[in-house]
Image (tube, rainbow, N blue to C red; front, side, top):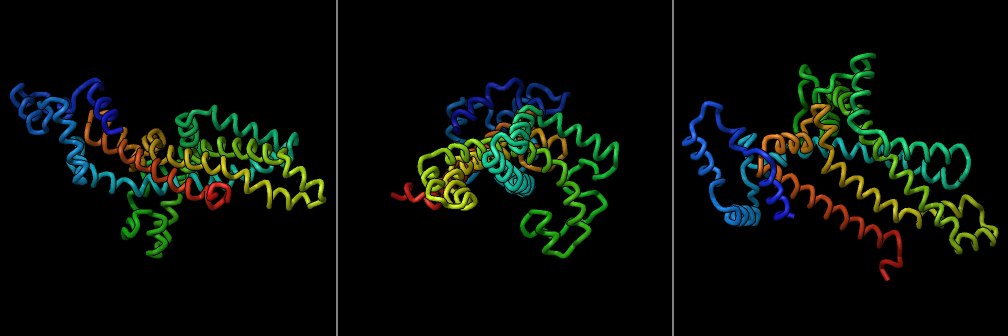
Length: 317
């Protein structure tokens, strides 16, 4: 992944020197900047230096912020974590029961509703839904604050404990900051949660239908076990394995790919950081962000493997 990312950043059109140097700079000054950042060296040498830096925990220095990339990732990560975690919790609370109800009541209006939500959630572009909600909820009806970040300028931020504004304001007993942070969080969370509900509801419905039609569930029905017990005790647990995989995929995607939402809502997270890095040909920042996203996916799927063993004894065997 480090090799692929390194190559892709170098083939992007433009140069980071175009963003750093003044329009009035001379060729000698531009060359001096290239020497300073090591961009005049052969690509294999630049890559070797990058890999050696990773081994020391050094991801390089961002051309855009002039700060170490590791420090930037640490600074912007809490905003993305708060946004995506709230979205995935809401999507799970809504999507999984919705898909389960659609499978249990197959052919009913609930089932049709689940399929409509799944299709609409996949079909609606995130950027379009974001713009519509901003226009209606902020500009037209004035129900929510302006999409200008995590807090209004007039609100004093709570003392940083975890980096998550909702938790920090609760720990600091700051009700004003909590209400304002929740208001700013509502629109972007709604957009991300709506996009995540669709795959979760769809995979829950499909997986539950497969389990309900399996021989062991049919045998339990023939034995006269109550239908509610069959659904919750036998079908639901078996149906959750594919849902767990989809949940990991969606959560990893949100953590590493919420670029559009963060950009539209001026959310100071890693998605917006990555967008600015790509726009400015900021090689170290782009490489650091993709490395972060890769590690997030690996960590999430390791956790899913462990949970598989907890939910399904056959995995342990």
